[in-house]
Image 1 (cartoon, helix red, strand yellow):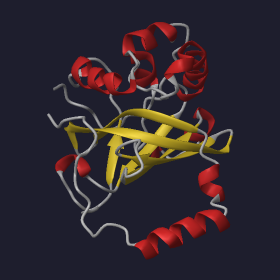
Image 2 (image 1 turned 60 degrees about the vertical axis):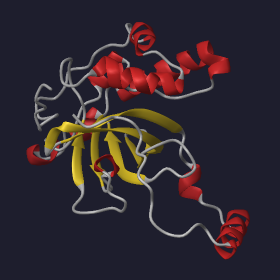
Image 3 (image 1 turned 135 degrees about the vertical axis):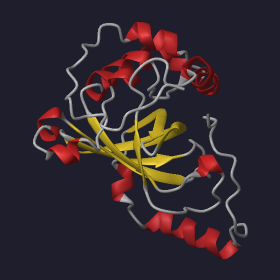
Length: 223
């Protein structure tokens, strides 16, 4: 089973030159970067390769609303300044999902297990932990109903120093026994100073929606 730790792959190339640093600084002062300013949530969870359910990647999502029914997320292999952009995820509400062709619906995954298990978190300030927990739980009430379509472009988990090969469709874990949950989620929790068990308790009151039978179309074998 592939490790779930954030990638330690070294990106090839020389350090930023003084010229690049100056240009970046100037651009940041003058240009607006409006699409990036719309990002309103940082989510962390694990994605599974649809082509190989024994491979999974811890993924940081930076998400923005296009409408109340459509979100778009930029995916990174870590939360730090040198994190690699490894993919994209789109999230839509059930009313949009149900209008898709059946073949298309099979490419989308549910978020029910991720939310209820405590796997999906919204990292926040520990000094405001109780207040932030309430904010996170409200966010999970929305996310649990959504369907996601995810492609990864950079397989840093296998050591690729650059984006290689075709985009990989990613799916989510949907139940217990599909990977070593306590180990990998526990290691993630230690880094973010959270506890999935507490998340489970906080989310007990979140209603479980009915998952469309066409979702989660790629099966995940037990580890």
